[in-house]
Amino acid sequence: MGGLPMLNIAPTALLDHYLGISRLLAGQLDFRSAIKAVGAEVSHIIPHDHLDVCMTMVNGLYHTAYETGLDTAWGQLAPAPVANSPIRALLWGQVDVMMTADAQIDPQFQFEASFTRPIFEHNLRSRIHVPLKVGGEVIGALSCSSHQVDFYSASDVSNAQSIADLLSPYFFALRAADQAKQSAIVEAEARAREEGLRLGALSLTEALERERQRIGMDLHDQTLADLTRLSRRLDRLIQERDLNGEALEPIARSLQHCMQDLREIIEEAKPSVLQLFGFAHAVENHLDRAVRDQGSQIKCNLTDETDGLIDLLDQTVRIALFRIVQEAINNAVRHAQADAIEVRLRNNPTSLIIEVSDTGHGVPRRERRSGGGIDNMMTRARLISAKFTLGPNRDGGGTTVRLQLPLTNSRRKAAGDMP
Image (cartoon, rainbow, N blue to C red; front, side, top):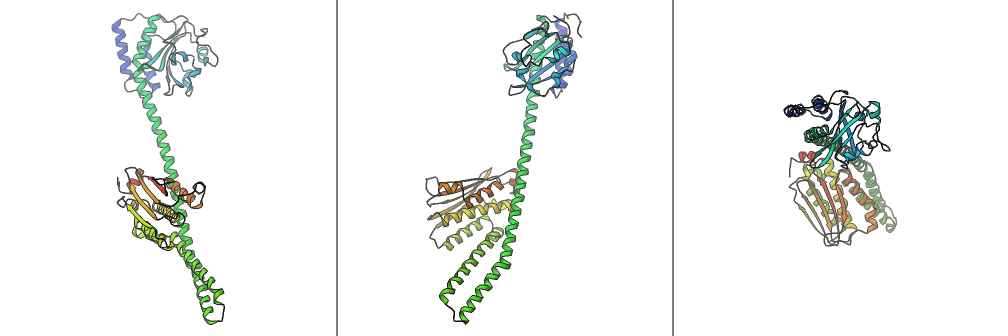
């Protein structure tokens, strides 16, 4: 449109054009279609060969141009640094308007690293740049360019600012919608990755559990049977022959201990009590047995405030939780020299919380940093996306093992949408 005479527009006609811009904006769902829709109407107010809207991103560091009239490299760039924009002073709020009779020789556009190539490639001479503002914040700029030198006047600047004020709230809403869309995409991708990791972890846990059960059955069918036969044979040899009983008795006792250890391994490999009677009963059973087998006089208490929530979770998660609690109880009984152990099961709307507390001497720092049992508990917790903490009790003495399992939407659904 370069070469057109300056327009002297009557106020009523100017108002009609502004109303036309407002009508054309309605229903436009993206920046590019919006600026193209209003380009012709804007030309009735400010003749131009090139029109663009430059929008800064929320962080203010990058901007993107949307144009009509001419397709330039400005509109083809991915989000570019504001610091390289020829109108960075306007976008940074350092000036209220930028106007030039000839952009190709105007030093305000020419600085080191300034991306001015389209000015020369498309012979852009006269230019007007006014800010798009919302709440006093510059969110972008409206730019009008002509091929002619010294084409625009102060009245054009005033009209351009009026158009920018008309466009600003709509383009601000488009930017907010775009930002919300991008945030939703990022969140959905993050959730998908998290769900994928969780499912992968559950699959790994299931495979490990199946392997433990297989080992348990193998030990029961072969190793334990062999040791039982060996023990009976030794008993028969002792009875039938004149052997040194004092020498053979420790061997028989060791074999008995070995069989007891193997029975415990088999029991741990297949927690039948957990499967048959539920989590709380299985924990209570293990607590009683651990104290009894150790020959201790430890006071034990279990408090279940979950109303059976754990038993409604996925079996793999239940078994992992039981293993961790089992190890925590074993540590308290065997190593803590405690006189009391308390297990508490509770939940809130977002998490399941399990605490195993004892009144013992605590866990040395070196063992907290590295230890087979503790490492196993941490690994199991990580596989089911639970938070594991180990530290002193609230009164500063003893030790508390704490598990916090987030109740995700899928877990809440599996648990019958319990609170």
